[in-house]
Length: 236
Image 1 (cartoon, rainbow, N blue to C red):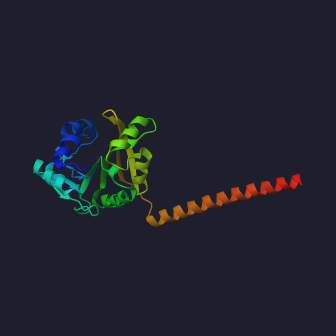
Image 2 (tube, helix red, strand yellow):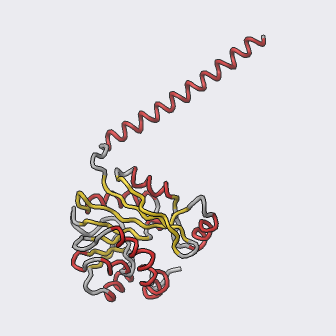
Image 3 (spheres, rainbow, N blue to C red):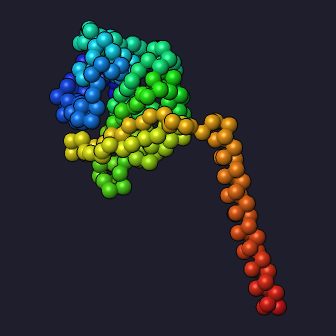
């Protein structure tokens, strides 16, 4: 069910709730002062209050929410995002905020966005990510999130982190916490690796690994067949 921007702002991302569970955690670990910030999937602009207006870029594919955000926060910059190209220049931002967005997006699309993030981030830039996640220790929470959250792609901790790792990002898990009673949240950062493996080398490593695995499997199969043949010969 689609919520109007006003209802979304009041009930999904009320400011007090965002301050308590999101902003306080971010501010306790990072200084956003004088930092250029891209708020990816900004919605109605709940995160802009912790950013300098002149250095903030909020983007979202929902034009109605972007328009509502502009009305609420006229000093900040909000733009409609076409879900492919981020409308800001190369190496522009110090930080990218990704707050409760990735669990709405399939893996293939996230891979494309990670490529765009590497384009718009400064070389020393960093992503700050907070997402709901599935925990093997909290079955009831997992069930609740899968039943009632509008995001279709809530992942495990490892599934989130490997999405970044495969695209040459290094990550650091800051904290795992509970939001309210029934939401598990993971808070982590990601930055481009200092010495990433070239794509060609990465493909070669992948092929070599596959061939090694296949050779090992064939060797094991040959060994089993040899043992079976020897056993049959002994019996005869």
